[in-house]
Image (cartoon, rainbow, N blue to C red; front, side):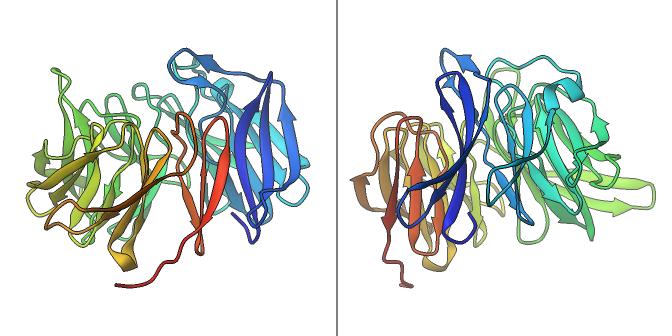
Length: 340
């Protein structure tokens, strides 16, 4: 989102389309088209990633690996690459899903567990980190011990690399859930999703710190009180909130104990409103719900139908305007948000 304009990535017939619309009216401003179509019977058609905006350019990654840098005002192509080709990987079952990450003069993407960095001005490839197992996650920038680093969840665990050159800093080898983004606690620990040989899911808290012989990674706890699979989770005031399957759940970050579990939202998505201690939840069926982000109990304050159809796209807030979309339609809602 930039001012009254927002970008999204969609599929129209045989073409992947990067679109620019007005927030205020929904009117289209420009469209960039690529002759590409990814389809999978469960996931459906089209690109799966969120565009990134920086310094007058929009960066997008399509379902077949097409990475575009476009002029954000006109949609004119600045440069284009194919991340799947550059990473030397075959397309995974559900396609390329990584959202581009801007770090300094680089744009960094994940392609089925590999990381590829490009010069964002010209598109020249800077570095590649080989795949550590299939992944549908996006590169995630954090700072630990004063050092910026990029985390990627993949099938064989979590990998941290230095943004400047792709050097691997540390790993945590554990069968992960390679669709969910990691998170950090207020004191700098890392939260990752896990899976074991029996298929059980959960959250693991890692203490990560630099040492004289390299980075030290220790497990603080692993909890089955929150088991995100398709959706991300959020951290707020010492607790994590997310989906335990299709049901919302909250855990205490001090020990991983579950505080509450309630409501059914399918494979939905959510936003944290930290000042109001609230969660905006968009269900898989297109319902919009307002839920308390407090650890005492599960409370759903309101629910309404937002859009029709299977809704997997992440919502976004621009001021007091909420944007929601799926593969069929999109809508904007003006919300009266105030502190309680």
